[in-house]
Image 1 (cartoon, rainbow, N blue to C red):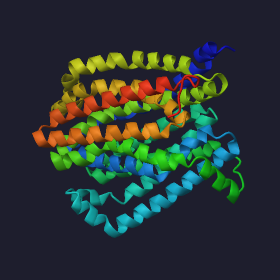
Image 2: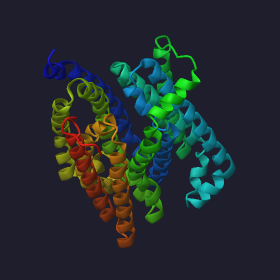
Image 3: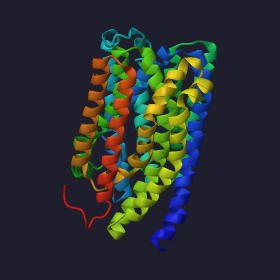
Image 4: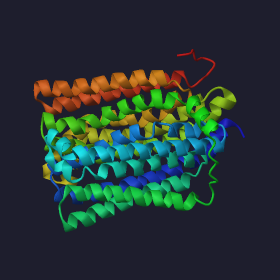
Length: 423
């Protein structure tokens, strides 16, 4: 079968399978959000945003990024060994995090200026571990091309979290309830995956020499990949932690709502495309020395998907948010209008950045992520200097557009091995 024919058939089916699941998964919380925004204030959403930021940051550290090597390991047995190593590392990290919170949790909450977070800080280590294991298993499922199960697990996770959050909100308005619902939803999704694959996976025996050899072979993932991923997450999550200190929890809540209904769906849809794209791109690079055809196909498909809603938000963002979520959230619509171009660049360019990991250009990725982090920090600083939250959001949007564009250009350059110089 010719590569172009493959792209139009199996590649398209795999992408559609994941995208259909992720679309449903994201439609559920988006549908529930108008209810929650009428039960919770922007300030309460801002506190929940801090919880989500801590999970995202902790998960990047917890696995040592060895789950990335699960996809590219030559043998299934080695891929499983890497998965087990990654899960073990995340378990140790989560235990250490729990110990730190038990000992210094109240001091951490007081030092942050938001003592309310002390009520749910103990949930964070459990959520980090659950999400870390979930990510490792997703990479294994991607390797085995179990895209239907990946899509189904996302729907289960999203639906469980949303239903539990509504139940909690109807019973009592407590921010820890939102965090607890999130943690339980992740657990249910993990149980689904484990239940489906437990009879099909034969765990390899412990072989100390082989384990150490694999760690040495893929040492760049924890040593270079972890700092890179951490910088990436910090670039996206740092505003949730810093904005309450610079402005207020209400501003952080407005910013968080935009990411909940705009950036998060875009991120998951892009991730669905990325998972299939990475698999196909890795095969094409190994067999043909280039993945440029699938690169261009993916690029054009994502532009077609993302451009219409981006234009709609840029024109009618404030009216849309005020109508759907309530008048108190009109300002979030302004943020959405400003961040819409960045969202489009993220949707289109972030999946294509998988080429950099396939080619193991981790130093380049670290350099680009470092620049992005510095631009985000500068945007927050300028917002503080000028005491203008809207100006800060403008700087954040411009920074994101520039980063994702440069990332995509470098990925295109590296999509053909013959024309690539060592970096």
